[in-house]
Image 1 (tube, rainbow, N blue to C red):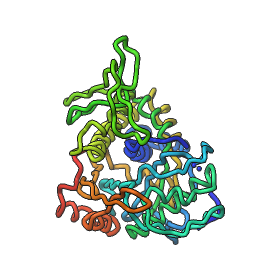
Image 2 (image 1 turned 45 degrees about the vertical axis):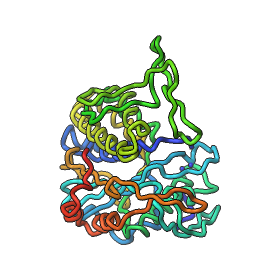
Image 3 (image 1 turned 60 degrees about the horizontal axis):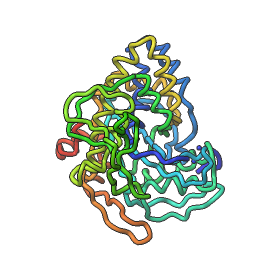
Length: 382
């Protein structure tokens, strides 16, 4: 662990897919789609780099060869906002690149996963370790700190927690700024995709005179939506649509009115579908557009803080040069089903199933295709 090394406002959990978009767009920008050398230089120069993994990383010579695992983390608050709120990781994703670098696998760790968090001293406040929700690890690691130092220590304890849970040593890591990432979607202008079910928004609607308004009220915890009279909610009908940036982000947030059958996992599926749609549009309409490209690269760079794990961003981009959006395979933990229990003093937690642990072992062993062959239903329809 180290003594040196960002904690602000609540970000919705739908933002996990933004995390993936930022990282994948960054590496895809290094491909041969457009003036590769110029694009790569601009893209890698726009990304802030920090030591995030710390003591959770491996030792020895680092190169891009072989299977790789990138730990992606999104926060519900930012240390730099100095609002004294605890900063929990809202999104935790393992991006697995197999040995031949032919495709990429995305495995989301539920933020309420009940895990063992190791003891940790950030130099300001010590944490004695214990069982808790995995999204608390970042908070325990960053307590008493602000800015980059809080981000680095929070990420390190989370990485140590993931390593204890899975046995996986992260080869690289990244933190996303959700607010800044909205600029990426704004640069693209629209996102065209297939909406697989009727979805009603609880966040955005309009009054009879056309003014934007919130169509549903919720309780303090953001639950139990109640219809606001006189406000018509945004409605996304099943079928093909070209969504505006506001509509696209709103669609990906929805969970409450999907019903108990879908809920969080339905939202996760929609996020994955939107992710691929945005990636395809960015590659075809963004990286091939001399007018959009500079703005897109700048927007991507502002979203992320990256720890390249001692491997240059140019090498990471080269390794993924042949990976396209259709090569991203998203995998459901717990087969897309909730496996919860109540823990005194902590509340409702999600217990990772034995098969989920087998999935994580396959990521560690670089045998994910064999796992998916035995468990085909775990591939998300995205």
